[in-house]
Amino acid sequence: MMMGYVADIALGNAILTITDQREIGAAGGAAASVRTAVAGTCQAVYNVVLANRRSTTVPAAVVPAVLGAGLPKDSTALILSALSLGTPAAWSAVKGLTPEIRAVAVSAYHSGLSQAFKTVYLVSLAFTGLGILLSLLAPNTSKLLTEKVAVSLQTRKPKEENAA
Image (cartoon, rainbow, N blue to C red; front, side, top):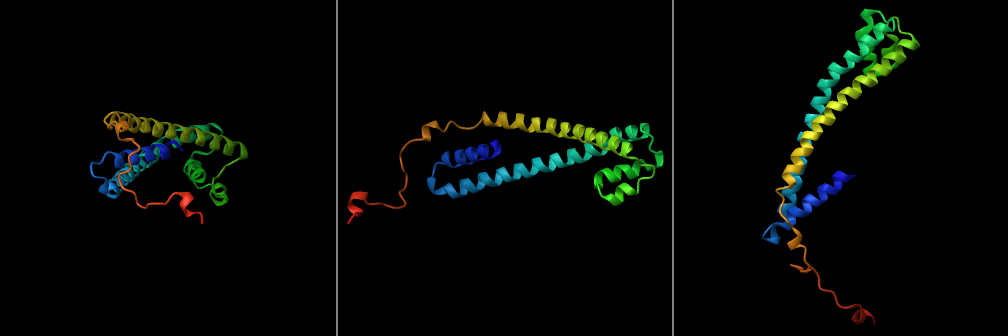
């Protein structure tokens, strides 16, 4: 919710600070394009970080837990696959799986995912810090917020004259 509010403020500031109000469409379009490009880049970075961390944190959490619970060592790859897929066929392919081992695996899987998402959160802090620093460079728009109307698109008659 807050991201939408911030985006609206940024677009508003972009169109307020232009010197020629006839360029309002171009300014708004450029600001929206920049915002979309930055958001796409951030999303790509988050996805790569999550995929890379998940590929290390999940096995590091799950394998020792399920081996300690009694799962045969040759079934560790299958249980990692079953955790990712979640289908009945994937679970039934795991040799030596008991309900207790499955519960341990799911708990360890959640722990591994949690560790991966913590890393994504830390990466988002870097983008947040950059955003805060860049916001310090934003112009002061308070002097531009007046009651002056640059162009009136339509002139209306007072309501008293319209009543017949």
